[in-house]
Image 1 (tube, one colour):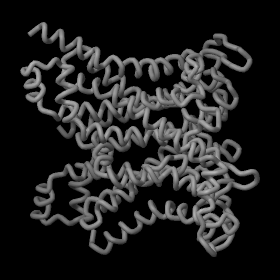
Image 2: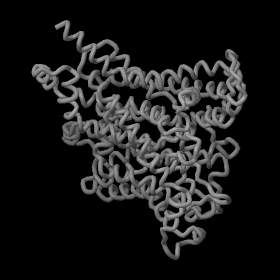
Image 3: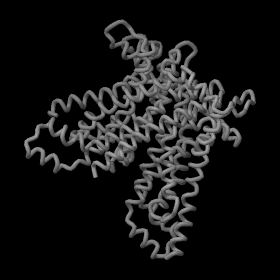
Image 4: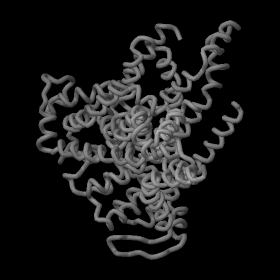
Length: 291
Length: 267
């Protein structure tokens, strides 16, 4: 038996090795190298590469553009994910109850999820185009340059995110809904509970794990948002829609300042790690409560 | 919800999610010179012809097919054996692998961009489609591992033990017996990985410089005219870029839904 266990372990290592190499070499190593790079001044075009300690991070704390991007990313994530959950819950209920055309409805809402974010960003840019876009054609009042002013542009990016990812949230909630046993509803009906009361007292509490899970997935994604903002507004007008990833990208790729760009990325990573830590703790506590 | 309210809600959701897409489809057929009018006087395929001929968008589609196809193949080739080992074999480091995959799933891709840029440059893979396949496949690995581990766990241990009793080594049991049984899970993972690589923008934007090597999302993101945005052409390109995904989505709707919600079901 021991020899078989040893052989199993040897085989297992051979089977796992390629995956471990890829994860280590293409994901872990770059992140570690990014941490180191954040402590350096690296400008490839000037062949400049030297250790500067925490100078990049000290600069971050005094960088108004960074602090604004941080606050904006938090705002973007909170509003987008909040709106997605609020819309996804009724959508999941509709998908759950639909009898005829259920497959069609489900496939239809999957389309915004499936198309590339770059495509959906251009799609919304054209919808919101101030001259001839669909919104301008239907808008009753004076024409608005949606993507030309800071607040409307940021909320347009949020709308794009909501349009694109609400279907995913709804599907996660739908899976949760379908996990609730029909017996529970039958018991509620016997007790004469109203629909609203059944929803409040049964559906919502039993749906809590699915809601928290969707919240976790979506918050992490929203905090890392790049495609939607970069293609819709490129961070403009005047950096007013710049999120952390977009600011880091511009610093890295456009300005070629790898050290400072890496510091912004590390800060983004730290925020995402903190956020996921908090959400996972809430999720774990929810699981304990349920058990 | 009453029947009528239910129908109204379903209609409203359909309009919100499909309306913008329908508008884009109409725009793609709308003569570019008439975009200022309330309605087009005629519909034309001109924008499609322009996008494919003048902008060489067919090349971008081909690049995307190559990158997404190769990334999917690599992620599955590497992910399936690893997932089998995690699901069926006893070894130290199993938790470490899954923990690493989970951590990688949480990385902001932007945090890996500059070191990867330096590495790919050193390897001579910068501005090559092959250089894009490595990060695309790697960042799809956590999902692949997660889906396939679940798939292999669902195959009864008895089947694995019977294969061994018949004289299979663990690897033979994996390749000859369990892998064919895991086909539905493999298909689900393949569809999702393909869609994710097809849609990937950040790495493609950063690592590819030559216009003829652009993938679909990059080509569309960098689409611009000399004076005005060429909305008709953008719409035509969008429809061309989306069509394969719409077909995939409609054909494999059940698989996509089950794959996407695999994590949610367990709560």
